[in-house]
Length: 245
Image (tube, rainbow, N blue to C red; front, top):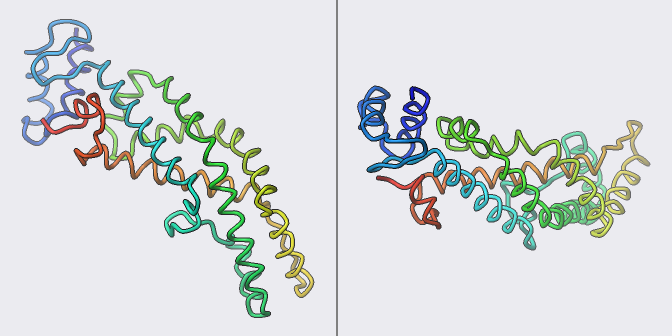
């Protein structure tokens, strides 16, 4: 019974304004007065099942919107927040080549890696959605008490290893398809001819990391909107869990 009361109290903390409830004591009092059975709802309370469903829905919507945005043409390339540029260790390469009139070669390399990220992003949504299915009640309640990107952090923690393993071959194939590997090789071959310090960064690892960072960045932005903006609460369960009561 104590565990049931605590779970229901936590669910209140998300759907009601915590500051207006008299703090946790107020929530516990209200929870104890409304609970009538396991996973029941009464008044403005939400069952743990509803909370889990709402958080899963938020991640599903966020993942779909983010991957759709970034997989479109120029999804990465024309978005300053996620655009993939030369890695830090290659900044000197870029500067040297531009000063030698090889700016187009560098620009082609940058465009091609962003095209690869856009291409690979098309495969990310199903991987995210499969991961969301395994969210437990404990996970959901932890997210409920977390920050405004707690669900995104959960998704990153639970999918990063498998997602990287699945994403990397797609990135590698995309790099080949967009000629990124060719351009990148030309860039560093040109630079290495005029430099005593040779540079050979791992393009696939670099682009994979940057592409995933971009996707998680926008999943987080989507989560923030769903938590705070009624117009982003596009389904009934999102309105129930995240809407103002």
